Length: 277
Ligand code: F6R
Image (cartoon, rainbow, N blue to C red; front, side, top):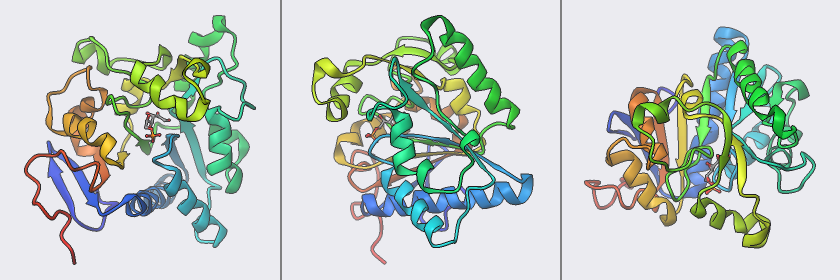
């Protein structure tokens, strides 16, 4: 929370920053990422970031690229791990998250190619478990994640940890693995795949346990279509049916950055929040 200068309000012991619009969310997210890079590289000589794809973080990545192009920010000492990847998918497929990351960030900054890691949608089926375990092993040998950046699905998913009937304890122990995508997730993926039939229905995802272990977690949401999931995750019970609610169990390490629309279903906010300065 120290990465945010202003207006962070506490909710379920988490920090919540509510901003006027998506652009302000992107700027605040980029500022937080930059602050974490600076702090971690100053104290440990490197920063280890867990990154997300999707439409929500695109503006934050664009801002980080701008900072890099202006000579203000280097990724020389940064290592990244992405949350998820469709499976099976070729790394070169334009719809792969590997392509997304290359296009929006990794191909546009000075990160070393062997420090930018994504789950590989082209490993043989027989090697999935080994690949997922190795991915977690790499994160551990890098000293764990300084930051996990998250978006939230309309169904409350984080990464591709989808709503399910597990107990909270079981859900909190979920590791990196192959999952089936929830119908809401598949419906939202039509935007990228062109038709319902074309959506790849399975994916590799970092587990809940790995996400919750990050030293700092920043979750972004913009738009009224996220308002229900945001309210359930922040003010509802902790349940595997709303995977983002599991963040409540590591509350002091979590900051939400929301625009006014995504925050609109939160109970008890002043009518004109955030205050106009
Ligand atoms: C992406 C990811 C997903 C997205 C979520 C929101 O790597 O893990 O959980 O963050 O589906 O997606 P957008 O931002 O497209 O609404």
